[in-house]
Length: 206
Image 1 (cartoon, rainbow, N blue to C red):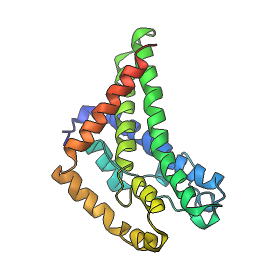
Image 2: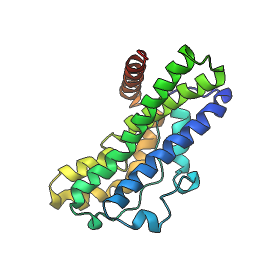
Image 3: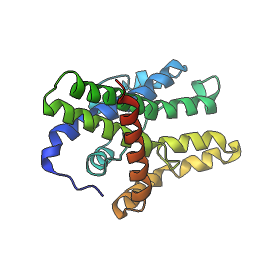
Image 4: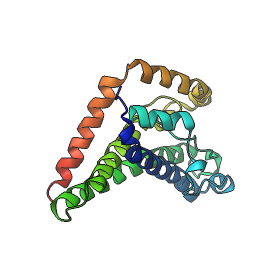
């Protein structure tokens, strides 16, 4: 577990808000584009953080660098191919986080090399890289209710699909236990460090 220093909060909180809002808005937009009116009806096509934040998931993101947002309410029956549509919707959130992390990496390098940016901007960009990378990686774990579980759900035989979905209600409790006990620490932080290092290497040429 990463120890939180209170002086980090001015960087962590806005970085977490940006990561979560963009993550969830991407899910909602893709679902809406695929023909599902539910996100619009529930006013989830919004940049208002209050429509997307899950209190427990946000706290975990700030303290552990891994977390989740309020589940997206969608109706896959509105998609031309419901199970394939679920894969696209599930991938949209993590993909957006990775895109933001890479853009932040370019801005981080450019701010240092060319713009002589103040330290607070450079620090904030580093947190954007870290938080978006962590949110994207964590949500790809194939464990309910994370996005990775939706991808697995689309791949398993249909007769087991709805049984699989019933276990989502227990997912958050188990995730909290795994995070607080550190069971996932080595795997998650290895993945996080690997992605951040890849981003920095990929952007260092500018």
